[in-house]
Amino acid sequence: MTTAHKATTTPGQNILAGDIGGTNVRLALVALDENGARIQHARTYESRRYAGLGAAVHEFLSEVPERPAQARYAVAGPVESGVAHLPNLDWVVDTAALAMETGIADTQLLNDFSAVGYAVPLLGANDLVELQAGQPAPRSPIAILGAGTGLGQGFLVWAGEGYCVCDSEGGHADFAPRDATECAFRAWLQDHYGHASWERVLSGSGLVNLYHFLAESNDAQERPDVQAAMSKGDPAAVIAQHGLAGDDPLCTRALSMFVSAYGAQAGNIALMLQAGAVYLAGGIAPKILAALRGPGFRAAFRDKGRFTTMMDTMAIHVIVNPHVGLIAAAASARTGGLASGS
Image (cartoon, rainbow, N blue to C red):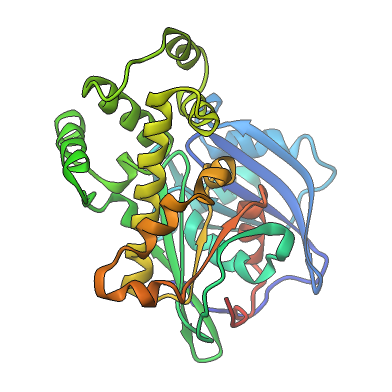
């Protein structure tokens, strides 16, 4: 748990912010003031081009006009005693070693989805798309989850004068099937991976898993042109593209199952927390927004038996600002207590 703490930055001071995922390293200088966050000199690097985070930071610093005094990195993995192991990237990031390597003594790491909690109070109407208005109670818990390279989860709880940002690795919890098809899919995941986690379903690779499972189950025939496109590019993006267009039955079915599972797990987390609001972060949600706005997501979110009425009171937002990870990392350096609200 990361509690609210006093500001350590001067208004307008630039912070080196990083959003470190299994696919991309995003770095920027971020200025924070009373009006929010201003991103400057943003760069994106392919994670697997580098042996470690320090090498990417060195390249970034060689391209920008200043070396900031503070660095905050939101990483896609748990952070224990200043050390992060990134499960979707073969990196171990040590805070002390990174500070020495980059020459920025005030360096900190935090889990990427806990970091999003710091960004929530800075997000405005243009940063969000509402899926459900809800009627959230003041100071109620806030749930955050998001599918991308993996499945991130985190949450905020009220503590006295502000929210506390709490880490979670719930994306690696057991996938809970809801019908016969999902039971068969869970067995398929078990056979292929040994552990059927939510991340094996709700991630870019999870969408590909659904596609291959349905193809092997003869749910629909694979189209040669779709197979060829998947082999040449990002297969999850190809599936999503055809699924949104509705021009390929197999992709459409895979995306439909993905959206329904996404809604179910969002509802699970919201119910466990009795959350007032749920924020969908990550790279996939903004790209499949049309599907999330359809009936499948909300139907699965609300399908909690006797608690369906409670689920209707919870607000659901999709974070569409592509720089939320950078804003979050920078905001963690200066927040003096997260503002209440949802």
